[in-house]
Image (cartoon, rainbow, N blue to C red; front, side, top):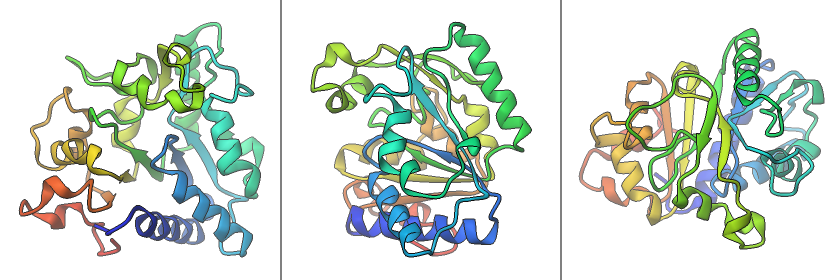
Length: 253
């Protein structure tokens, strides 16, 4: 646990840069939203100082809004371009994204899973967690879907993205394409970011709760190599309940 989000983000970016230095051909899974913003800012700074070389790395983003073209300012591809891609030496050919405007969503999801399999799967997956426990856009429900799929977004999730759409909830897409739980759980390492007291319930369910599709993040308990990067607010529900569970395995946070 870190006292502030800024401390956590700086340390997390350094950990990612270290992983890329160790394995230049690293296959990274990337996420959008508010949680990774400071991580990406720190990665951009590391690249500017010559401490991060992504020229041989490959990326797969975990989701994209349905119906939005990449050039739409509200798309996750545009987000990644603004906050990371255009500032680092990542090859365009090595950037992989779900196409939110694909005419056949099911075929697009199958294509994406095949591309990820061809790349050998994810070496390091960066994730956030929603207040309702969703990871990627695997929303709470009766069951979770293994493969990439079209997901209907909850009202809570849509409202969390309203700032990217001029604070107009009606403009936030109702659905998205997302990696499924199989790709998440098969990643070799998962790094989860959670900041703020509004994430405390989800973090507590992720670490201590029963395995349930009502809290999709709880299934990360099945993964052998997960690191949680938390500030004090997000970790507040873990006080006195085994805080070591919320630290990176080798003591980095």
